[in-house]
Length: 72
Image (cartoon, rainbow, N blue to C red):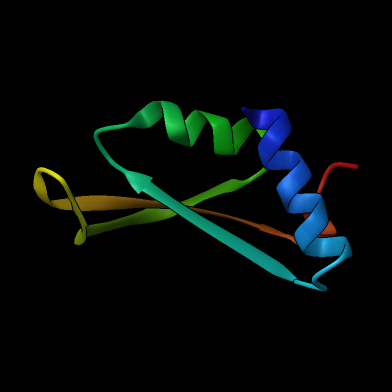
């Protein structure tokens, strides 16, 4: 999965001209955060009770990457 996320990140920087990409995951699914870290994204923080999933309200964990930080 990190390889697929890296491909999406490269596309968004190169083709779509983005400067910053952010992503979030449910706090109860830390493996998603690990995928983001392996793809070069950096942990930004937790927004408490900011998300909604099939179990109700949940905490969101945020990651981001800047164009200048990407790993080519």
